[in-house]
Each structure stands twice: as structure tokens, then as C-alpha cells.
Length: 259
Length: 244
Image (cartoon, rainbow over all chains, first blue to last red; front, side):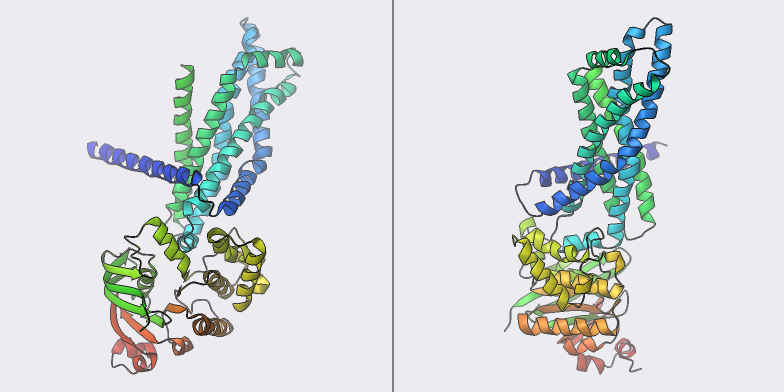
């Protein structure tokens, strides 16, 4: 048992070190003054924003609308029963904007784009495309990892803002069937309850989640050896580890800023 | 005497359980054409990577274009990569880019050529390799032979000093092979290209080679001109050339 715990701890530390090293290499490329391959990197970023952000709008919108409806209708009906209808806006801001918005959007991006990134890079490893890039003197981090990281971060920030807007406004629009609160009063209360720090922390969470998703999924994709059977194995590991990393980061940020 | 461009001195290396090379020594001079010859898992693929500086030896020393890739700085390695073209056994074209963009990739990455010049250069290279009609095709829509010819175009577009081709016969039909042979002969004659290939079966390409490096179980058996190699009194070589 002790040996198992020790072995797992060592593996965990080595894994975290690998991810941190990949982060270091990626940020080094990001801030490198070298213009080499900038055009290709920009194309990669645009492509990633399209796949991760634009293509995910329908599913994120639908989920945000349903979740917003559930939270608003439950809070809108339950709070007046205990005489706490004045805090409805605060509950919505805490539940949707601060926590569920960034976290659920991150989970959607992990399931849609994280696995896609890992699978794409894994297949590139199997097909010797990564070896070919190295043989041509093209940095794998600059060509493959950095554009994906920037693309996922930008897309995740935009998707989170979109999720929050659809959940808070759209959710109320649907819940209005059951609620008596006027729309203008609702929006005014939400605006009052929402502070600048709430918006800032939501963006910080999205940025951190974006880094975690892109780097962990790229790491697992590039960890594939020469066999196609390793691709789904690494994709599954990447998904689990990314979800865990997002939850840990969420706890760290929430505890740091709100407790 | 022409300068030495590849110098492997008692190099040993292993690539997992797949291939190993032991105490392998080889010198290649500028403009030479050399074929590493042997059966599958004879170590010729790994020896080719060692020659190209794509694999670090566990012992011995390897110098390519006067650079020791294991001890060189990132900038020196980058400079070396620009002067060396490598064609893998699989086409290894980037699957998200079409054929044109695959061939244009090293030019866009390593040079400051304007897009019009890149277009001319890429299309000329694709035409030489006989795959210009597929310039807007994605790699998964190509046959193995066309994919490898496109990969050859990508390796040649930077006008390298040395061209390495792993398993040169793999996936090529008779027509592709004639095209590849003509192209290699032309680049060698007109541009003084040094060529190092790995081959696992006798082929008409031997006529293009100055020397055959015969390998078995990761070890060098002999280095001979093709005509002499075919007459060697060795069971493995006899099997290879169909003498037995």
C-alpha cells in the first residue's frame, strides 16, 4: 500500500512536471521575438477558434438556456417562500456567472475540442507527421501546441460570456412563463448584484481552464507512440485529467478570491 | 577530394525493441549516392536517422554537415535541418494541409520569400515530382505513391545539401519509381545533391548508387559498389540478390 502510494505520488509529480515544462516551452514560443512561422501559427489559431468557439455556439447556447431556466425557475419559486426573493439576483450571479458558467463551458470544450485535439495530435504522431515537422526544423510546440492553446483560451473566454448571457437573459425569458418579476427589474437587479470582480474572476477562470485543456490534451496527444490503439487510451486519460484539473483550478480561484 | 558531409564513427543506438545499430561507421562525401541495404529490422532505418542527425547515438560520434546534432545548440540544429531533406517511409504529409500547403510549409516557415515566389517554386517542384495535378488535394485523398512523391517534393523544395529517403521503394508503382529515379539522377547531376536511401529489395535504383552499405542485425556487413556487392560471397547477400 505504501509502495503503491509512493509510486502514484512520483508518477503524479512527474506528470505535473511534464505539463509545466510544456507550458514553459509554449509560453517561450508565444513571447519569442522570432517571426518564423507566424503566418502558419495565426492560421492555426483561427482554425482552433472556429472549431472550439464558433462551432460550439449551438450546444453551449442550448445547455445554457436549459440550465439558466432550471436555476432561475427553482430560485424564483423557492426564494419567495422563505421571504428571500430580494436575493434572487445574487443567487443567479453566484450560481450561474461565478461557478456554473465557466465550469460547464470548460467541460463542453473538454468533451468537444479537448478530445479532438488529443486525437488529432495522436494520429499525427502515428502517421509520422510530428517526426516530419521535427525533420524539417519546424518547432512542434510553435506549430501545433501554441496555436491550439491561444485558440482554446480565446474561444473559452467568448463561450463563457455567451453562456452567462444566454443562461441569465434567455433563462429568464423562458422562466417568465412561471415568474411574476418584470424583465427590467430582473435585469437591474442582476446588474446591481454583478460586480467587476465577478466578471474579472470569470475571465481568469476561463483563461486558466483554457490553458489546462489545451496543454493537457496536447501533452497526451504527443505522448502517443507508434500505435493507433494508444490514441483512444490517451484521449480518455486526457479527458479525465483535464476535468480534474479544471475542478482543482476552480476551487483554487474561488477560495483565493471569495473566501 | 570532396568534403565529408556525413561521418558516423562506431555509433550504437536503439529504437525501442524495433531496431538497433551497433558499432556502425560510415563516411559519405558531398555528391555521393549511397544506399543502406538490408532486410526489415536490419537497422538500416535507424542508421538512416543517425546519418540525418534525427536520432542521438548512445555511443560513438555522429557529424552531419560538420555539426554534431547531439551537442549542437538549438540554432545550429535548426540550420542543419534546413540543409537536410528527409522522406519518411510513410508520406507523413500534414493531414490538415493540402498538398500545395504541405510543400510550401518549410518555405513559409524558414524563408522570407513572397507568396508569389513560393507559389512558383512549389508548383515547379510538384511538377518535377509528377504530382502537380494533386496540388489542391488533401493528403488522405492520395495514393501511397503520390503521397510519397509529394513528400519528396516537400523535401526537395528547400534545395537541401543531403536528401534522405527511408524505404525508397515503399508504395511506389513502376511509373512512380521511374519518376523518382529520374528526379534523383537530375538533382544529383545538376545540383550535386548527396543522396542516402534505405532499400529492402534489389531495384533498378542501384544503378544510381555509388555504394551499397549492406546491413544485418544492426551491424555493417560490407560497403561495396553495386556490381561488386551482387557478386559477394555471403549467404545473406546471395539471398538478397537472388544468387542462391
